[in-house]
Image (cartoon, rainbow over all chains, first blue to last red; front, side):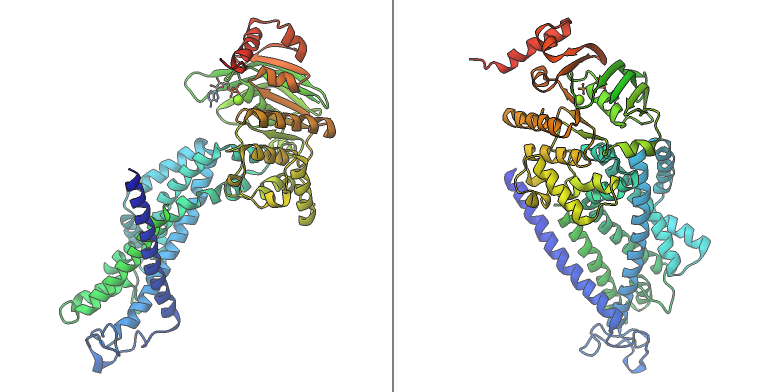
Amino acid sequence: MQIGKKYSKKKHSANLIIGLVITSTMLFLIILGFFYTPYDPTKMDSSAKLAAPSLSHLMGCDNFGRDIFSRVLKGMGNTFIIAFATVVIGVVSGIIIGAVTGYFGGWLDEVVMRINDVVFAFPSILLALVFISLFGTGKYNVVLALGIAFVPSFARIVRGEFIKYREMDYVKSARLAGVPHMRIIFVHILPNTMTVLLSSIMIGFNNAVLAEAGMSYLGIGVQPPDASLGSMLSEAQGYLFSAPNYAVFTGLMIILLVLGFSLLADGLKN
Amino acid sequence: MLEVKNLNIEFHDHDAPEHIVRNINMTLKYGEILGIVGESGSGKSMTAMAIAGLLRRHDVTTSGEIIFDKKELLSAKRSELRKIQGNDIGVIFQEPMTSLNPTKRIGWQVEESLKIHKPEIGKAERYRLVIESLKNVELDNPELIYKKYPHELSGGMRQRVMIAAAMICAPKLLIADEPTTALDVTIQLQIVKLLQRLNREQKTSILFISHDLSLVKSICGRILVMHDGEKVEEGAADEIFNNPGQEYTRELINAIPKLEKPKL
Ligand SMILES: Nc1ncnc2c1ncn2[C@@H]1O[C@H](COP(=O)(O)OP(=O)(O)O)[C@@H](O)[C@H]1O
Ligand SMILES: [Mg+2]
């Protein structure tokens, strides 16, 4: 048992390091893509149509002769921003709803959590699809749709934490010192929930990357001329045989992005 | 300064309502230390929480009167109550391990009441008051302790920090709910001495709650004995100790030597 424990500790720290390396590399590429791409990602070059990877085109070119590496950089940036915004909406609303219902309890908690359960019962991608079909496609709607679909799971996690913490002696002490409820919720309790919240934020981020990719792949997410990893993958599908590098590199980026955060989340659990 | 009249507390979180505290009456004068004794589960903490205003929950009903400084607290507005909590009434609990927030520095936790009740006090002055308060509870190196996290302190030190936090606004009443139960005997005595000194020097009235009759006798002038949510008897500490009027009190007294005499 002792050995098993040691082993799992080692595994966790290895995950943490690998996750950190992958994630920071990806973040570096994303930030790089905001300021610099080797080529204009939308510029077509008929002489380079479907060019194979080479030193001048690291990942080759697509059917219009656009540099895939440049497009991947930009697309990754878009994917990241969408996933980030989605998680922000989900987390901020989740924190507010979960904190207030968990802390106060009572009938408000009952009502809000029943609604939460109903929303939670549907897969988030299905909810997002319904939202998109009602309000239209485009990246803002994707963000909004996924963000709202993510609220219930974050609200649940935060609520659970607050139910645990509201009974703590130091929370009682704060109330006995006349500290107002809102200050207790956001200043006294919230920082204590951060470890739990942080790993679910990372898992949520991954789900958002995958959900966005899925939606854009289906053609209901990001629309041209914007590109995300998902929409690029869908485009690459058409040239799977003539230019497999397009699909391979795009897919690889999605995998690395998700893998990095998964390992990081796992490593952070300890 | 404190007068409790016919206090009743009922819980409604199970099917049948539970009557936890029945018809408790007590008075506490300025500068006095009143002890409440009774076995665990006799309703001491609930009585204390009712006085401190922490039983305003949807699953609890309270009735009776709690008059503190001429104000009735049970029916007071929340905003009124909040002005009194931490400012005029300070509370410390049994568990020094869980009474401090693990993610905040000691200084931050001690000065919280000041921030709430005396927002006009500036940062530098607040720091000075916190250091003074930490010194006042006989902690060495208060500047160092100010920056520490709770897990870096021992149980006894944490309980001193709790007392410093409860006393920083110089409350008129300190409610100490089993403040020494989780501590070693030697540290217990130090904390009791500290509370006695604060009572003497700052004229803070203390409601001292414990299941340990000998401890209560050593610090309190008057004692109230509780059993199953009811007052069994009340009187001067010596009188109750030497001449218990009730069978239950006698049992409490008999319980002491059994625990304290080492079995050889
Ligand atoms: N949430 C609750 N619901 C119902 N009964 C409770 C609750 N909390 C405490 N009690 C009961 O209240 C009684 C008094 O508890 P307490 O005041 O903590 O006793 P003491 O401090 O004297 O040990 C106990 O019998 C306990 O079981
Ligand atoms: Mg108790």
